[in-house]
Image (cartoon, one colour):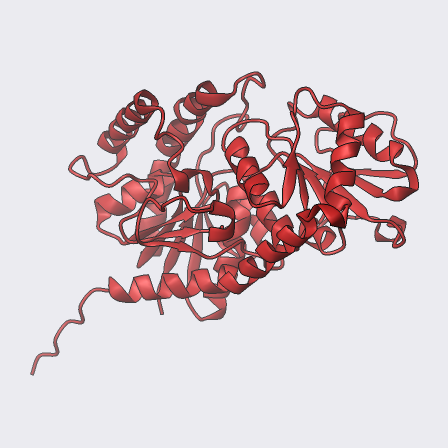
Length: 396
């Protein structure tokens, strides 16, 4: 029996992959606790899980929508991830002292978990919820890489072991990456102990009231989603998507996710919801239009669904290109695409002659074979066993 503490940022896409892992570890008899945003974790993982609440940035992650490229990367680390680590550090330390974990499983962007575990001498494993970090996106930007190194060094001096040298984004004990080689392509992995387990597809708490009876089984279902962190930037795109779906008429059944309530007049043939049970809906969908968020992409591919990708920022352009290179989708320009071009892109991926569905199904088979949350739990058990303290000899 091993005690696991999971450390996560207040980002749905970073929590969801670990919900299934936590459930699998608990099923195998291991005590599991979480450290992070308690309300969000309880909403996503269930009310009965053990959570050590940590302070969070006021207002969450809010970014100027015009930021892209290196500027967006710098903003994300300087204005959110590093301040988040400083805020979470006392709560994580209290969680470790109270729960006494044998292993800490920390999200790649909740680096306080890695730094505090390192200081306390506890084995820690990285949870990587995006494939973008695995191909070293800063390789061509040495100045940005050096800047990030200095930023993380200062953070380590404040909350971690100043003598430590490991990059807190990549644990020397191992990295659990929720992606697969078929999406990464031939890019070398940053660390030999990176375990590619595919997306974690497991039951999630669902409190939605989705109108399943309004789906038309005679039409292909197309899901449009920009994730949970892009409500500030998605109004124009979602309006164009609604127009595109309406223009396709009886050829498709459109379902549009609008958490920011940006849409007003919606034609009767398109369903618009603030939230949807995404995994259940993907099981009945035929294609997905999205922002190339890693979770949505991998969950769609797991279900064998081709994609229309409109990356906005952060890792999304990298993930979108990975999908295009794998032949499983087409890319459009988020800020410039109109309804006509979106409609054409949707028709392209739905057309079996284009091969996008076949490529997506092949990736889906490989993802399912990788094992997801079950395989992740097995790797965690092995890592814990390899680094367990030596038993104290019996005295006579």
